Amino acid sequence: MSDHISLVHGDITQQEVDVIVNAANNHLHRGGGVDAAIHKAGGPDILEECKAWVRQHGELPTGKVMMSTSGDLPVKKVIHTAGPIWYGGKSGEELLLTNCYVNSLKLAAEQGFTSIAFPSISTGVFGYPKDKAAKAAIAAVTHFLEQDTTIEKVVFVCFDEENYNIYKQLLPL
Ligand code: ADP
Image (cartoon, rainbow, N blue to C red):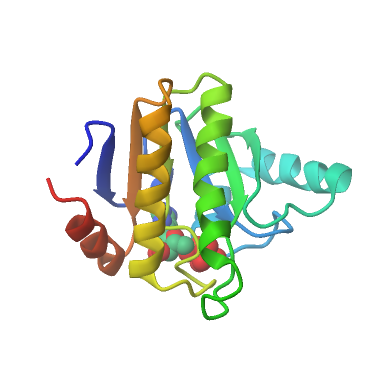
């Protein structure tokens, strides 16, 4: 495994990094899974900023990112990204998922943050096959880190056992 990449089986709201990424939706509102967990643990200020952002900019396009306060979470910022819904793989899902990771990393690096944690974007209600999503996520992060000097630590946080085992296979220690 790259010196910069680590794997955790756990809850992203407990991670002590500069930035955590939220697998949100285009409305930045009323998500389930990791989105609900982040808003629950982070408190109402995060949702207020998300709503204000959507009022100003409209919906967040799939693959794009926005940054909000971290509220009560033990991190500096939350980056919200809208992952693709899986429609069978021929609707540009892989590129859109890659964009979620790369755009999050770019925004974090631009802001001078050095550590970031990702959930397994799109692998819950959005139905992206977990093995394919993990491969795309690892490829995107690895490629980004080859060219970047700001980000020192990327944590893949797998909440469910299945994702954790897939990442463990793909990221041999
Ligand atoms: P999506 O709509 O992008 O599929 P979900 O939140 O439904 O988003 O699922 C994305 C992934 O987040 C799933 O693999 C799920 O197991 C995981 N997840 C759910 N809760 C948490 C959490 N608290 N921390 C990290 N990952 C989580």
